[in-house]
Image (tube, rainbow, N blue to C red; front, side, top):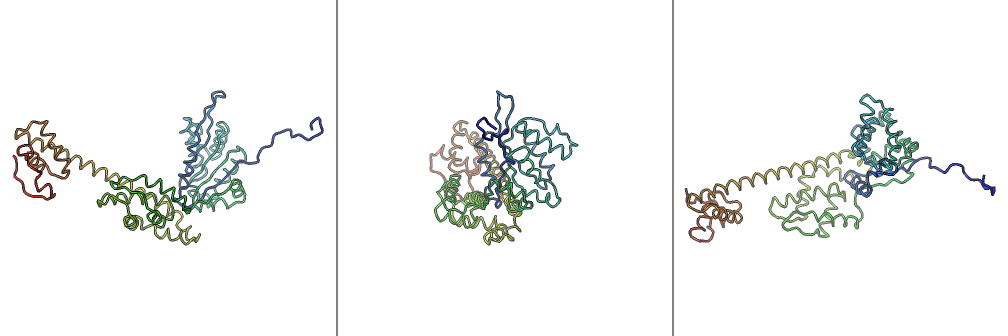
Amino acid sequence: MSHDGKLVPIYPHRRTHAYCSGVFGLSGAGKSTTLESALRLFPKVIHHTKFGFNQLVWLKVDVPRGASLKDTLKVILETVDDVLGTKYVKEVGSRATLADHANKLHRVARRHHLGLIVLDEMQNALHAVTKSDPLFDFFVNLTNVVQVPVMVSGTPKAAGLFRKTLRSARRISSHGVITWNGLSDKTDWGRFCNQLQKYQWLSDAQPLTSADRNYLHTLTLGLPGIAIPLFQLSQYAAITNGVERLSRTIFKDVFDEKMASLRPILAAIRSRSKVRMFKYDDILGDTLDDIVESIEEQAKRYGYHEAAMEHDKNESAISAVSRLMLLGVPQDIASALISQVQREYPAATSQQLSNEAARQFYQGKAPSESLNKGTQVKQEEIV
């Protein structure tokens, strides 16, 4: 009590628990990308020289498949070690129990004044619930005892996990639950397409028309995780068939050929039936992973093909230069001639290169008809 008779608290008010929130939505909707983009606005670590410690501002961890609480805690400690260069996992030891890992994380969080833990891909912890694993109870306790805010992210099934107990549901709803199911708003989709169309590697690259954007949204339901691979694969197709320009026809053909497995999943999403959507909850993520992996493999194959073609062109040029030198053409002039002819006719064989270069050197004639027409005809050998 103060001198004027008013009641004054002896201890300052403290929240009973830290903030907790959740972001749930379909695979490929852009949850992880958005979270990472927001987190990149903050430093991971702040070194407080005056006080002699490193503050860990935020930590994002992908929950491993089939994760138990012990597995998840170990992944978190490993991530701390990667960021700070510490050896907390080694300090715990290979024979550490669940309690050892939990106590260690409590101490680490306090020591480094951990500001936020983001747990992504929480649907991977489904089996933890069926086995009565204390995974969720631990993080509820973490917000109570250590006062570390926790943000969870995952598919609709992950949202269901946290509604198993009233305590978890209350904690998550303390700072809001965001449902993220793709870019349904036209303005948001327009902004997305404005950025997407910048990433074109076509000789006849054109901005996406209003009709193109609407058609892409129809095919992908506004899910960036589907739209981006489709955009990439369509460019491969446009380059391969020589069109060098995107169109609705290419989008449709590529979707039908490369993404047909997504049709029943997208149909379930369109139906807005939770039962049908839950059926494909895990399959959508796995299918998108397979599609992205196929894109990477295709890019590698294309790279190997380009390297092989470049090697063949070099071999043809060397052989053609040798032929000209045998005819008495100086090496520097022969090299320049062959380079010029090869630029004009990149598909020409060594024989065609040397014949054309010799013709231009000795006779000053126009390119031969065989090269102009791109046909294969018998030519008189030089040597």
